[in-house]
Length: 407
View 1 (tube, rainbow, N blue to C red):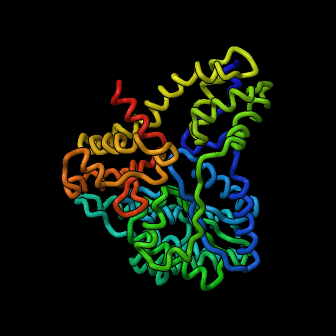
View 2 (tube, rainbow, N blue to C red):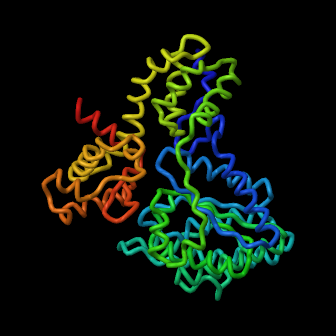
View 3 (cartoon, one colour):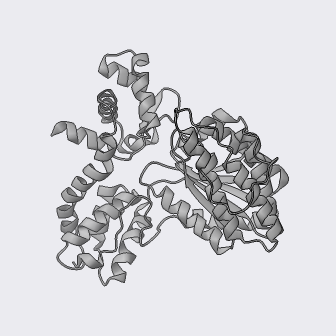
């Protein structure tokens, strides 16, 4: 098969040639946008799922839907230990520019407020960095407007900023959509501010919606900040594809290039990928390259599997494992061993394993393992969906670790 014509695209956040199995989420978001446009109350959205299920791809597709309606949109990626203020200001600046309201005075006024908001970030604690901060400018070419969204308290400022920007959008007959990837990495004070701002927007019925994406424990992160957070957001679980959707992700792109899969090959692809979108693209790419001709057969998939697994071991699993310290790797290996006896549907992160079992296996007290566990959570390698249990954020990570230990 011609590798130049290979249609499959394994990459972080890279849109596949066929966005399969997400029609319900796209249609639901269209309803949200239409309701908000008509002044109807709607909650903001949060996409939940493991690594590799296509949350970022879907987030970008939802943004495209908002752009098609001529809404102002902005996107940012939350990062650990990085305050929300500056990246959010950049995202909102883009959103206001996309909105292009007819009233330039109102636009310049709200951009001036946004500029003051951006420049109010507290000075970094490290010595010698204050001068660099003072030289930083947000790139907004209007004078700063003081007295609004510039108190220095992120919760007060964000409520005021969202209200003012949404007011300009309402005056233009459109809306604003803010997209936040890796939402679980927001700082606690920023989570609290975001919840407060969404609460105020809901009370005022203003046309601004927040769409977040991140790991499955985001509801716990939000509820720890504000008790009413579960009423502010609609949580949408993004999971692996069913066999029909997985076949849709593989077959139409191949047919566009004059090729096809046999039914047996599609079944084998589902077995080795378990329906995870990233794995489908990774195995699809390698299988295309090794297949001598069309249609692609089950034997082609079996020949390709070792090479695909080797690539995933380096780029998808290995890069994450390398970020762990020796004590953290010990914890991960123990998790993998404990999860080995679970049914396959549970070992992929749905239920996780008991932290007490990990401590028992390692012959340690649970409290002594807390630093390693907490650090792995901060690094995004594991998460706690419920008290006393822990899960991998990456599907098949336990299987990878067990295979690595056996070699």
